[in-house]
Image (tube, rainbow, N blue to C red; front, side, top):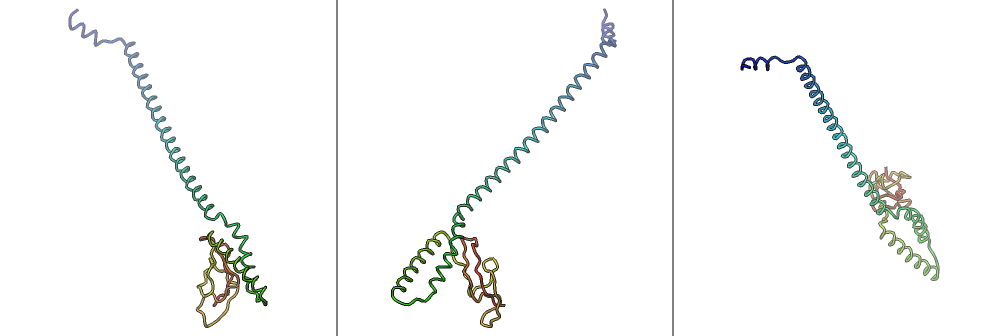
Length: 184
């Protein structure tokens, strides 16, 4: 065969072969498209899982911080229930020690009670209990409970004139506000 005939044969192709080639090209394109779609879906799944992991880690960190704060508060205020029960005992001691007594035996007894009272207060102070200062102080609704008002010229406005019942705090938390009489 001559060179020209070979070229003609190469140029002339069988329509069946062309259809098969087009079909194969179409299949390859469809496979590539399917692979691209699958890759995109995998990328989306990865992003979704990564976001869930990040949120889960943030939730865990928040939980850990919150439980640490709760434990710290529990340790800080562990004796709050006990102090709440003992505050009325302090009030009764105060009232009992204000009573005037006669006789050496009674005075000796009162002196002993004063020592027990001081020891009791010292133990509470060691745990962080302190009295709320009231008389002569500016009225603070967080620390004082106004039960009476008066209009006395010797005091400035909104100043505590008299303490009716002592108030107590445990560290920075008010256990019981002081009941006070306030100047208008």
